[in-house]
Length: 400
Ligand code: NDP
Ligand code: MG
Image (cartoon, rainbow, N blue to C red; front, top):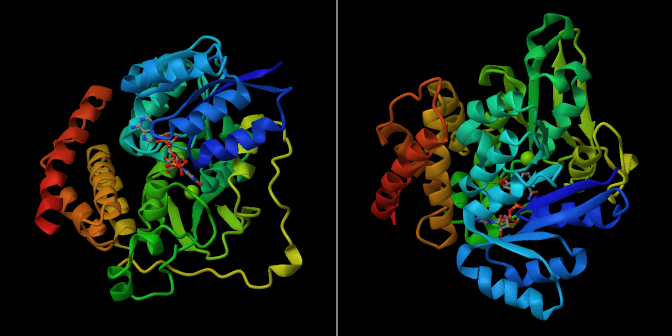
């Protein structure tokens, strides 16, 4: 049966990779809905190519975009803003939601998809960093399916037994023998440079990732290794483990995408070219497999796979993520909010790359947030997010 897909964040890097796969499998998948935010010219072209039934754009752009679609001879329902994204994520015609909006903006629609019992292909790691417990609870209560697109988490998912893939709490059953998870990290563009060199880095150097081609925010997060910190938190929620059970190892070649360590001494790893089409194709077709278009590995050319311990002074964001995870979800919300604003400030040349960690640390220690209660919901989370953003704006002004 044809799977009807909504790609939220269709104009981004994950959107590109997802639609490249879907374009080659249109018999099995229907591109039912798309969303874009600023790159609406690109969204229009995607509408012409895929002819979705529905599309979401910012509220202020609805009328203009609808007129452009009409002029192009397309009949597509246009919805606006956060409500529009939720409307599409919960549309009864949609089977699968690709959650590929960047940052906190992706949380409400991703959570709504979970509550509507959808199959969710999750790229938007910030949703789990902000609302891991609420998201996982919604998935379980509403029998949604959560499949990780993030290459590391997708690798770990693939290396776990099927019973744990279906129910993450099974990871605690000692008969499965899971001892640890290993997240691999490329180390980003500054791996071989000093802290002083990193301090002087310009925007173009920071977003030039050695192995992966990605959106700007995640590229900066990779340069500071905040991305690995966010992924550590993401992994805790996806695989129901404390941060102490998750190790991070720098593997600059990005061939091993992550590993599961078992108590008999086995390490199961997933390998592949650094191409997001592989994890996306895996999640789209799970438990089957489809061709992704990713280049096969040239194993004979891989004679030097390195494994390096991360320097937590240079990459303080990774240490902060562990601290935040230990402190509780209120802290991971603060860290995520502070980081989003700090990255934006860096991309606007207001602060240095290394100031991002300083701002994140100040936010974690200074924003006065009470622990979240066990029955906290999205409003409580968004309240902490707003408070953290107000504080961080001042912290950035002090440094800039
Ligand atoms: P991009 O910046 O390339 O794309 C982001 C998408 O989100 C775009 O479609 C953008 O629209 C949309 N968007 C941005 N802001 C808003 C908003 N306020 N409301 C609605 N939509 C918005 O990012 P990536 O594709 O690189 O990353 C997307 C997510 O996937 C992130 O959470 C990232 O961490 C995660 N991820 C990405 C990987 C990658 O390889 N790129 C790997 C693993 C995870 P527009 O472009 O039209 O403005
Ligand atoms: Mg990743």
